[in-house]
Amino acid sequence: MGKNKLKKFAQNELFAHVIQPSSSEVLNTDFRLKGKWNEEFGNANPIVLELACGKGEYSVGMAEIYPEKNFIGIDIKGARIFSGAKEVEEKRLSNVRFLRTKIDFITSFFAQNEISEIWILFADPQLEKPRKRLTSSIFLNRYIQILQPDGLLNLKSDSTDLYNFTRDESIPEFNAINGAVSFEKKADTNALYEEGIEEFDETMQAVLNIRTFYEQMWLEQGKKIMFLSYGMRK
Ligand SMILES: C[S@@+](CC[C@H](N)C(=O)[O-])C[C@H]1O[C@@H](n2cnc3c(N)ncnc32)[C@H](O)[C@@H]1O
Image (cartoon, rainbow, N blue to C red):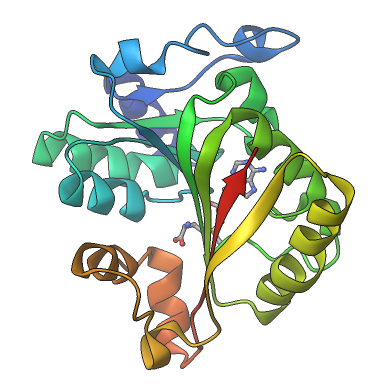
């Protein structure tokens, strides 16, 4: 690990709002905060996850827009999380946590119905490894365990492959197999900033205008931004 990354890793340890579990805390066991995240936040407000959060722009941005919700940014890369964690400290936001772990272990961290929304922003489309896509059936089967009924699954992406895969393959196939649980489409555009989403109110428009680090790069390259939103029925 480079010197700078090591420094950020050590600084993350000093932030009370960054949780970096050791492997023994999650290997074959549930994490100590599973089912207790509301106690961790000190309120009963809804908990929203930002998966593959990178620098956590959505966790920070949404925490400012919705002080009555709690946000947890999850990513495996500590140096990226550090940027968001620093901003949370500077802005004194009490409703954000960062969790450094693999999203693959998500059901060890959250209890049934503990989560109200999941946001996936500019995840790697994993063109060669469909099973690793964050909207593959493997991950959907994890999300349904932790999402509460009517919970939301939101995807913002620059990748036509990931957008098409999610919209036309993964979710329809999941819905066809799982009778009792399904994802119902609430919003869909393959040109978010050109078309907009009329039915969204001003607050939601502000949320969709938050730009992540990767999004900024793709916009500078002239790429179109796509957005999908689903409500989970169970
Ligand atoms: C392309 S970046 C996007 C980061 C951020 N959302 C943005 O838009 O700037 C993808 C991120 O996903 C994280 N990631 C990918 N697969 C992951 C996994 N299985 N568990 C945790 N993090 C993962 C990577 O570490 C990386 O920070």
